[in-house]
Image 1 (cartoon, helix red, strand yellow):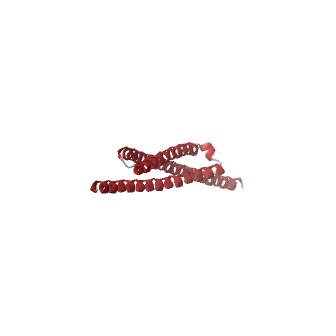
Image 2: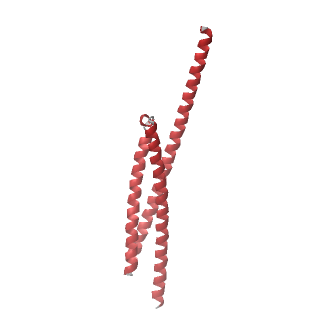
Length: 160
């Protein structure tokens, strides 16, 4: 009878060990995927900050060059909004960096509730980054229209 129990127990232990190893590998892959997503998100934020900085520099230059008070005012407003957007992106990036550090804490991530909440936070940050991208694109279109309006206004005043 002992000879039948031992192989059965050994098989059960091996199955449990294999399942545990498989779960561990799956968790590692999931963690690596989350880390990659966080790195991609932070790179996206860096790109948005660069675009915002470029836009701010252009708005500042246009504000200095224009003689029209109304246009100068509009450039100034866009410049200030751009600075605010850049500051929000910097804050979001700081939050994403903190989230990334917490996601790397294996002990903390063993708690399933914490893991779920951190994953949800990561997803929210990704959504916010995409919304910031939309906002930056909108501001870029507004800047383009302001430049076109100034070019039209300048050419019309030169024609008079």
